[in-house]
Length: 583
Ligand code: GLN
Image (cartoon, rainbow, N blue to C red):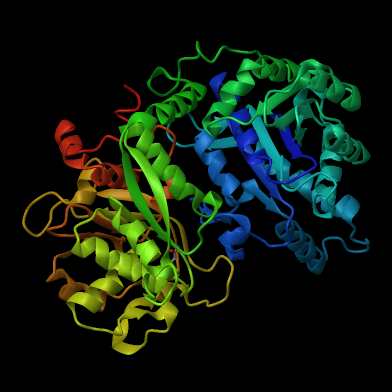
């Protein structure tokens, strides 16, 4: 029987419910349990695919092609499970299901209402997905011991109220030892005093929804004072042992350890009537480390890296200003940096400034880019910034700076090659209006449906790699994927490289190393006579894990620091991602 741990948030948004829920998952996994997760997004969009990342953070794509909230990525990384589209409940999906059923006549005779129809549909959905997990290679596939449910938004929002009602009804059907509610609140500090008024209001809102917290987690600048805990205990009606402090910490990787240090593991498992097992004695994990030890080690290594000379990575993108917009890419770099102990620092560069000499920041952005030891161009949509990305690709290619292009980044690298080497000044992407023989990047025939919403080439697909280059050396991609000839990575694109340019670019050293099953679609591009030029049509950031970075990221970080060749030598022309982390 699966146990439910629900995470809600009070007073303000952006407190880190996703980080908290992931960290609870890391704690439970460290006690030897199998944990899955459901993210509830109370918006009316069916999925996050059409929401701008500047608005809501990156769109995280699952194996099955679902375009979801970035927290699904947090969960996959923390829980080492594979999630599916059904692990992301949105109001759009629930309403769509209900309205379809109504049109089918499934409710014939009844008035279809929020209660019971919508609340029942939510409960049924949770029941359907909570009990099993599909694991990512480290643990077996099978029944889940715990299911985390994160309710997006803040208690008291109009949008989330129907979910709280559904949960209230759901809890009423369960045994008291089978569910637990963790409520995250904000404790502002004025002067030296920690203020609890916002928290009090949010307890009230929770109570009005018919719910009572089992744990209060107080996000604050510093550790909760005993008197703050006492007040919170009085106003929430729970014992102060169950009031847990979440002070600001240097790294989010420290949060599971912080929870454990306040006995959260024992308290949670005993509330849910499950045996507590000491994470330091549970040995069935990767290289003998429990998940919490892996996370703590990452934080320790981040600290140790501060004394290592910086390797600057120029991140040439459209949306600058929030880590959330490219969260998985940032994590991919972090996982790699802490694995190979390279002090990789991202330097954010506004792509649109690089292509326009009249732009006020043109010189400043180019100066930043020139100071970098590696250049990364991530994925993206729309024309804004695309010319700057082309310029960055050309700069990295001509100056032999390690380059890593992801999806749009690969497409812009191909456009740059066609313009500079094939003398086609109008070369471009059909996405941005290129026509006729200028179309280096073309609309993909299989996505004939020009409608928005789940219509791209999405999810996990196989890529076949050539092991050798034209001159008989091993290809970079073959080596970095530990000499695999087939790799599975996740995709999200509507346009692709036009194979009409294949032979002409190949004459200039463009190596089309990875293709899809049909051999007709470009997946991996490398360039001869360049220290490191790797561009991929897929999104390797979506499968990078703490301690086990995606090999494309690891290789790029190593190459930027000038350490890739020695790594290949050390491991016999393979990379062994994770090898250095788990020593
Ligand atoms: N906009 C491009 C396409 O649709 C690239 C997509 C991406 O970078 N995810 O093909």
